[in-house]
Length: 553
Ligand SMILES: [Cu+2]
Image (tube, rainbow, N blue to C red; front, side, top):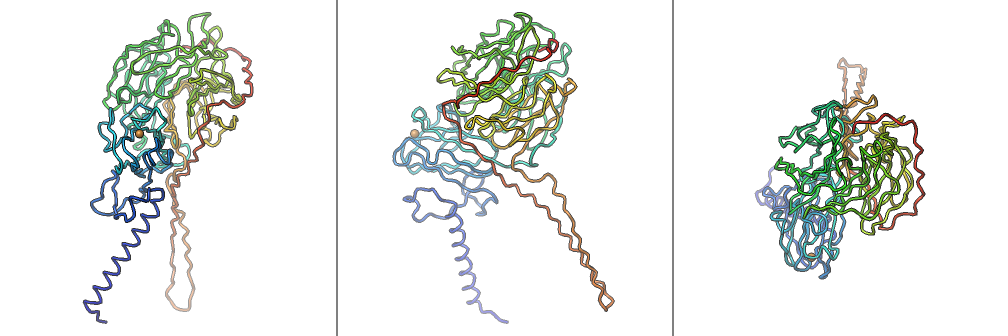
């Protein structure tokens, strides 16, 4: 068959035109909430992972672009102010009025993770005018808050909730910590997507304190011992959290004990994981007085809160009930006028919305630690504290984490049958607890271990005292909504040997390897709670069981 050159040309022109229509339809489908006025006839613009015009013209395989309007109608809002995307997706902010910025970080605190117009000089930052388009691609799961630097005090804030991007689904073993260890503090550092285990020790013998931070890379599943050196050996049981000072986020750490030295440190230091530098902070924690270990701790609006603590001296060792607030710039402490309803140490504590929640904690009497079910909600703005539904089991010497708006209390405890691997989930809207749901129990029970989460998708934990009371190096990691680990192809070889009259056996083994690794990220994000604590079911403090011998904090 012979086709003329003219016919060929007509065919190709038609094909290219049809392709153009398809691309247009596809991109139009994804651009749902864009202001219509400026995009009456939008040019086809394919962006790369950095939000720039792709040179090749080939779009990334899974990168969807989601639109947010900045100050639409001249109002001080981002619309929508909360968006849910998947890892690898791009957010495109379009200015509907002038004099606004997109600046990452809690309200009025630029943390330099991303910012308009081009992700540089986020602090102090700059304002842009109507028509500006800024894009940013999110490559790690997490909850990313941002604000307009000019109107942050007027509530011009937003959140990008990023889910997915991990495998395998559920709990799985990670690479061991470089040493067995206990009493380290876990911190997820969102700016570089890594998990840090700060301080701690390899045994309960003198001189076993760690001298450098451990860094876990979730993507590579590897640990690195960093070069920076702690300022002293009082690095057990520190209270740590990420705070931003002058546009740079750091891991701040407060207090801590050493194995054989009776005094407790009041010093504060901060670690810059990107520069790998530890530096002193000239604002010692006033509550220490040489003997108080920090209790529960959590970060809210760029402030570190410490609830309760462990006075290792008075009456042979007792819990404390004070609540303290640390501000990084300028570095300063304030004691809140509210106290805990009961003195407690090692309290699982986390922030959800604008409230601080606790579940469990250690009663400390004459130096003996006993797990409890005390559960509280603290409102730092109103400076009020109340009880919430009590955690369904007694625990202490562990952490609580905010995972998609739920408080997860991670295993822990020393009063039999503890330590535990149970994960209790508190729903602040319903004021009720779920056991091992939606996050199931992890594998190896433990207490005094570092743990943290990215807030939406992944949880890490490592080390701690295992069920025999010995420091372990085992690491466990949780991934929500990931694919199956190693898709084992179920070779359904249907060798149908049809015996025909002819001599040729037609054995066609059709090995259908059904490797269905479908990473469908379905992170259900619960609404952040309102500022009013739910009507509290009064928590009955657990009666103390057999007191265990005085521990070495
Ligand atoms: Cu603004």
